[in-house]
Amino acid sequence: MASNNTSPASSDPTSDPAGSDIGWEIQEILAERTSLSGENEILVVWKPGWIPKGNLMDGHLRDAWETSQKWSTSKTVAGRRMEVLLPVFPHTQLAADLELIARNKRQRPESPIHISSSSDNSAD
Image 1 (cartoon, rainbow, N blue to C red):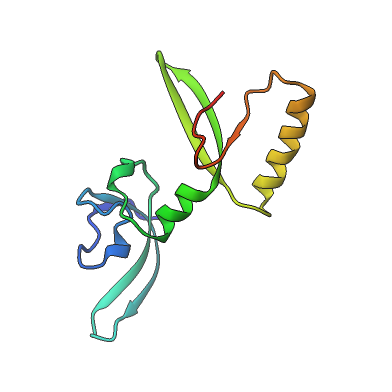
Image 2 (cartoon, helix red, strand yellow):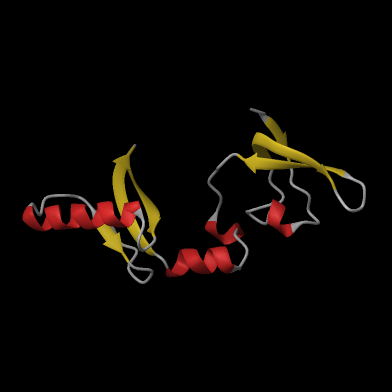
């Protein structure tokens, strides 16, 4: 597993998921090939990281995020409320698990689980 810091090629907008000039850390090298132009290329997995939402370019991934149903949880850390939203796609294990949790929550209302739509981004 590699641990190199680099900046993705600026000529390829798909190589920089944030659309910015910040450095990304390579998590793993998956493959190598010779391109049609004769240049050696490597296929990498970028280490996940948090970026400002405003840095994300418009496109189908952002559209899918904005329109997806989300699971929300929050916790107070060092005096600040931190909220995390995770997408919930239909017919996935997460969707099934959250439906089960929601049924249990109706039986025990003190549970802190909240499922929001794209228009409701508040947390309990």
